[in-house]
Image (tube, rainbow, N blue to C red; front, side, top):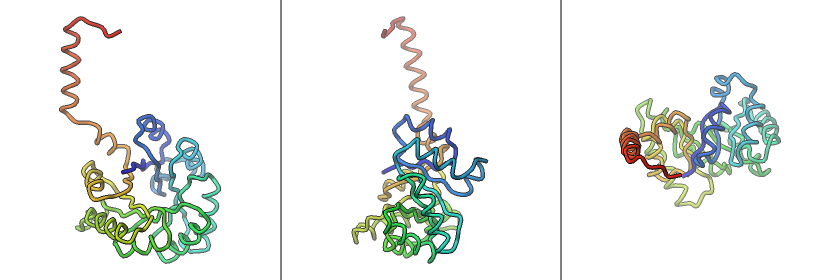
Length: 217
């Protein structure tokens, strides 16, 4: 399963790229607003840092302007994935952009029916929001599994991108259910790494090594 970093902060990308964990980046208007930077500058800088897809979301809600904005974003770099909402206009723009060779990430997916339409429209990625579904009493991971089954059964190329990841178990569950990608906030990536028994083990081994009085070099 690929890991996309869900952030608009360049510092997060620079910190985690050397780990080999980051296969792509997703952004959204909320993350951009929190960064305090210009949207196009952030996307351009991220595309320079990573070869994988960088999702950049349109601001428009109508087809014609989505298409115009999407084409403008795609010109920034060949690894931009234009992010479009799962609406009628969004899917029409998805079809048009993918026909032009542009990657598209269809976002705000909350049902298997919507995911089926996104795949038919040629989406590169579809982003079911598992955390937001959990928030309203639905099972976000059940949706991931349902979409993965449908896509596999009908050989769709669209990748299932588990979004709205809230904690490490969301990542593990998405992997178990067959998601192609999880887009993960930096905080959750760090939570995946740390375990108290690992920290305790390192502390113990370091202490015991010092007692030997030896040096490897």
